[in-house]
Image 1: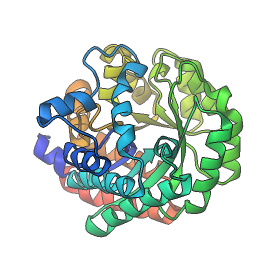
Image 2 (image 1 turned 180 degrees about the horizontal axis):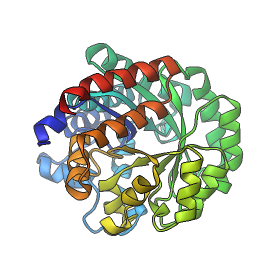
Image 3 (image 1 turned 30 degrees about the vertical axis):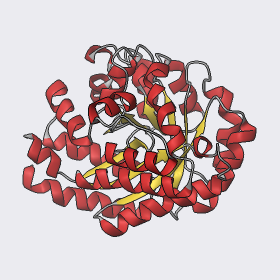
Length: 339
């Protein structure tokens, strides 16, 4: 499986952040729209929007997002950004992607949550029109924000479910704000019929994964801290949960200090449902094809494995059942010549 073949494969991605995945070209356009000066040199710009080489924690890794935030304060900016990230996915033959963003981070200049969501949905719809790709938005609550901020955002998202929005997520400072801090908002989102995924286990905190599972959430972003916790792995598999694995970003944030601390092998051996994701294309300076290449190099995954990962992603996608089945059937046809 050389890189050309990996690039050509049909793919599904469930875990990709909008503000961490903007192309340099889009960042320049957004900066011009916001009258924000940028370095003329692409290498200098990339240094501003990529994970710092000296990152030691998740919070260090998140620094570039502060640079992007002022660029995403208008409807036009959000529509452009959503289209850009979806177009990057389409160029890699991603057939379905869920792109997550926090409306809270685009409300600094008076934009409403509804307007922010509508803008992202428009951008994804344009991408669907232009490319062989379906993209939906996931609405992130930030775990460090109070429910008075997060709950109205989830309420604004609810009418869009099935119309450009797939569901909701919680992201942010996991170490200081474990799942129980946002349990009431999770319950509120579920009362609105918002399907939930959840960042957990990205900060050496296996108990956060257990708490998320106990809350009835069956898609876990990262799940890295599950390594060397066999009882929790058994619980994860028994729950039918799906892991949204993000290898490059986990190594950058030190969620895993090296491959021995990354949970792939143990989850795979236990029969867990696994998926491969970029997390942040630009901040992590990666692509989905590159992540497939790394899984092949590091773990010896086969073409059959890659099909299984994509079938897992299709089954866990926040789509109607008929659409999930159609996506799964398409993937099976596209992988058949390589099996």
